[in-house]
Length: 220
Image (cartoon, rainbow, N blue to C red):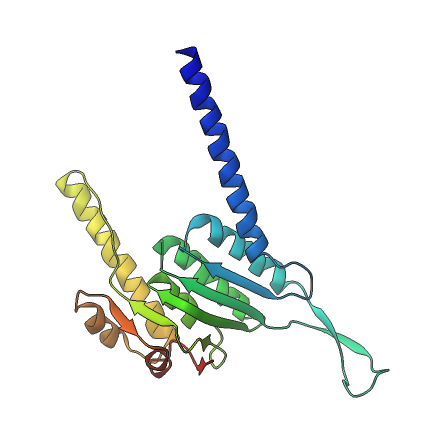
C-alpha cells in the first residue's frame, strides 16, 4: 500500500512537471521576446492558459512604445515614441466561449490605442473566427489555403429539469452574444448569421468567402 502511494505521488509530480513544461513552451511561443517584437500567436485550442498569456502580452505590448525618427530621410532627425501595430497569428480549431470573449474584449480595448493585425493560417474555426474578425478592419489577413468554420455553440450538461432549463438559457445567451459580436466585426448581419447556424451543420468557408463576408480583408 505504501509503495502504491509512493508511485502515485511520483506520477502526480511528473504530471505537474509536464504541465509546467507545456506552459513554459506556450509562454515562449506567445510572449514577445524583446521590446521590438510585437508578434503574438494562438495555436491550438482557445483555452484559459493560452488566453491568460495572450491577454498579458497585449497589456504589455499596448504600453510598449517604439522610438522612430520623425523624418526617416534625415539621419540626424529627432525621434518620437509611437505604438506600432501588434501582429496576431491565429490557427485554431476553436475552444471555450468564455475564454474567447475574454480575449476578444481585451483586443477591443487595445485597438483603442493601437492597431491589431490578425493573420489566419491553416484553420480558423468556431471561437477563432471572432478573434480573426476582431483585428483592425483593413488589416485582417488570411492565408489562401486557410479554412474557416462557423457553427452553433456546443455544450453538454446533466442534472435536474430546472437546472437544465437554466443551462439552456445560458447557452442561448452565449450563442446570441457570439452572433452579435460577429455581426459587429464583419459584413454579415445578425439575421444572416442566424440563418447560417440554423443549418445545424458546420459551415466551412474558403479564404475568398471569408473576405467576401468581412471576416478578413487580405488574402496572402
